[in-house]
Figure 1 (tube, helix red, strand yellow):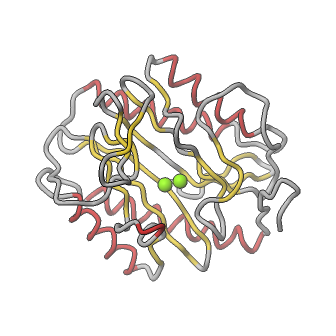
Figure 2 (cartoon, rainbow, N blue to C red):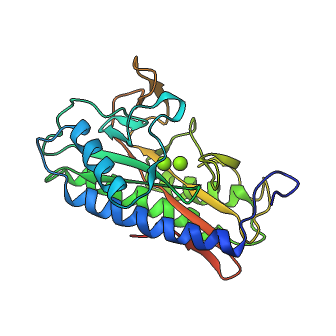
Figure 3 (cartoon, helix red, strand yellow):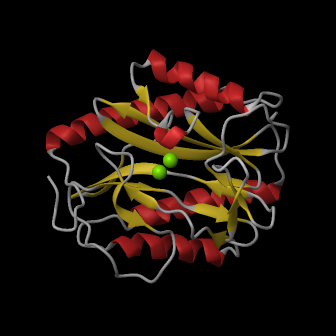
Length: 253
Ligand code: MG
Ligand code: MG
């Protein structure tokens, strides 16, 4: 069912499927995270993800999406999002953002984490912790009768309080039978604007946080987004449902 502003409202039966999908995707991410070590390539990470996905009888959501070649987006260090899995070797001290989506019984799920490879510098540990915290601050606002930009504003406020910057060129989104549905969910902006949140909406909230400037550029491969100044960036994402009891994180690990 679609509301006036074309944001789909999921039925109880659909939410049941989305909950199942969330549990499956979380278990894939947990296992994938456990397999990360220095000296493997992002292509190898993608292959591990592909096996984990096929073992659970779900489909990869990103492979083939607008021609994207991987099951995961693997973005290293100064790369923000949409990194193409490649022969790039992960080294001790790197940070890797893994963004992964699946299709379970015709419904999409989308989640991302950023992890340190081996031991990383305290300044990068802090970037990861604050980015994750900003995601949870945004999720806290995903309540019936709040507005979309209440999520955006909470994320930006937390990030900027720690003197990081929030990426503006890419946004979160509604999700369901399509990977990207209405509404768009920016990670910045004033509160109390945009569509009103209703029970049954399902959203992918995904702050991207930079150590330096918020500005980004797209690399020559046409996909990979990197920070303009080459400083590191982190990304966390959950798919959540809005319920009468508050936000429910479907992809919780
Ligand atoms: Mg994602
Ligand atoms: Mg997403």
